[in-house]
Image (tube, rainbow, N blue to C red; front, side, top):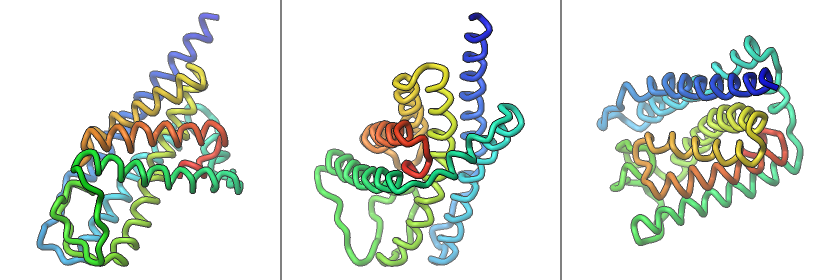
Length: 224
């Protein structure tokens, strides 16, 4: 009995430690700041490099841990499972997250976000805490599709596919879901431009939603 408790405690410690390692590695993406005078192509290239750094910081340590320490292939199984219902869950969750973003924006600024043909961000920290050059809707969508996929894949791979999985295994499904969502919300407190409204609605509540989808499907397809 004692050895089982010790094993669970050891897994929790390693899980939390790995999370901090991943977060530490991801901070290197914030060392260099883009020059506001960059042209659009250079700026987007800079942002792509940033997202790739975060993506690798969140995935490579987990893969190493799973392969070398836990001797398992759970991360492969979670990526191999792509069922139709997983996409339905994910599509539904995406709409919920979008409305949570609108809700947090409206509560914070007292108005609905406006979508126009030309972006010229006067509230620059609403998105990334950076000064964006003027971009068209089409240019922004192309960038955002890539950006959101890289962010979603890296974050969900770490928080749902590793942290939540291990916490549910050691603490129970409900406790693991709640604690991983809290941890997911707390790390967004450090994100530039994230208000407390966004942390609560988008990160914590969004973390609960996608954490529940992961619990029901045991696949990363839904949260990603």
